[in-house]
Image (cartoon, rainbow, N blue to C red):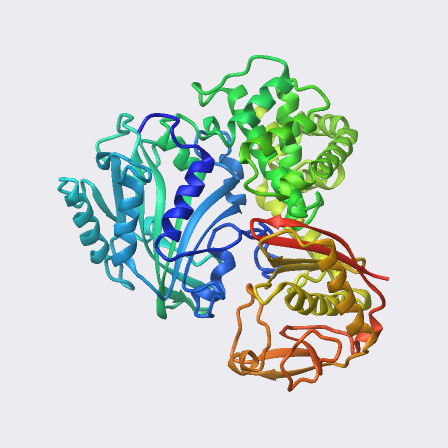
Length: 622
């Protein structure tokens, strides 16, 4: 394969086409904000939205799935600036939900990677790792055998310790995402960059950069329980993940992920905004190059987070977004950037992603407005905060101890909006460390006060449990039912966010919803409101709920009993029609109004794309 042959668009389409040809259904990507999982701030893995199905719940698209999914990883913020780490990664993934196993997946992986029709990688450049086993789970001998069979087709004797490397749980065990959930051994595929080995023990996974991980096949055969035990799943699953940008860099012989066609336009825009020749790739430890890469990464992530509805704040996702924007601003300042840069930078992000995610294309002006407002707010306090920090760093107590107190670091955050890492970066320049544990303690108290003040996001996408929010929550059920009636049963909720002022509802649908269809939906919802249906509920087994026509949401993980809310007759099958006895019926935790007549007039404000195959409606009650 010649260099620069594979573009991001081509790699996405090759991956999807390959698995569609093997019976997989393409499913839509979700927002990076998990609206029905209050335990996680962001989607950090492609499988995260699929956890209920990996645990046995039937997926409406079948047992073989494939998609692309943006993931955001806060753990990588500190590593940004080197040649391999990003906060936003795009994962290409395929899944088997109790269908095929490693006997199919490993040969498919080999075919996609090495056959000329697909990626055409020289088999001699491929190395793999497998799980070596421990006291709880045995070694994955089957994967070793299957890989040896594949390499043998290319005339390669793949010996363990030379081309196949058995590694422990730290390297070759995946999951769960949280404390509990599906997990299992994995087999990682590495591309040899032909750089010199770091030592005699250089191997895939050592981290020196010679071997770049490009794909991971996870064999989800176990579940981690609350008590810490690992038990076999009733049906094993396959979950694979290929990092788009990292794979592009390897396939095209690039020395840095920032040289790929996804990030190249953003780096170019950063250089132009600074009005000077900045380094473009060789000296990976150069201060200016690191700053340039940090800005590139943080701008890309900030644009996507804002497009997904996140706003800068001092809590939860908003705090992470604020950190990204302000850290980017500090490095832009170091690079000598001009004042008005956001228009060009947002355009460059859209150019790099080439229409793959419509949300960043539909509202660029809104994204620029958020970035500009945060810039203005930060600018008002930046100079004052910097003076304050310099004074503290030069104080006798800090000079003597060599450490900045956690209380001072938190005061800089609370008063001047300085993210911890920004304070740490500036302190390091003066040879001073920061008491990060003390900062974390102060920040934890701050978050608790915020929660007590009503800022906590509740499960189910509710901002609070106020009377107004409850009305909007009930309205989402009416909207869901009406959309399925007008557009078809393929419509399934993919997320919701409800505040006292409005509702936002994401759902599966392949195309823009027309004006006439939106009017029909509005008419059905308002008809249900005027019908003053009772809203009733009962607890039952999930199987009973499904058998009586209840809708179950994608992101919910159900226990032995669930609560079912019906708009109308609890015993009836739902149908969103004016004469229906049961208008809507869903598994839900509540709360809801007593009767639909309490809602008021329903009006759709906007319909737009949320992500590939997912539409978004914003609506109000008047």
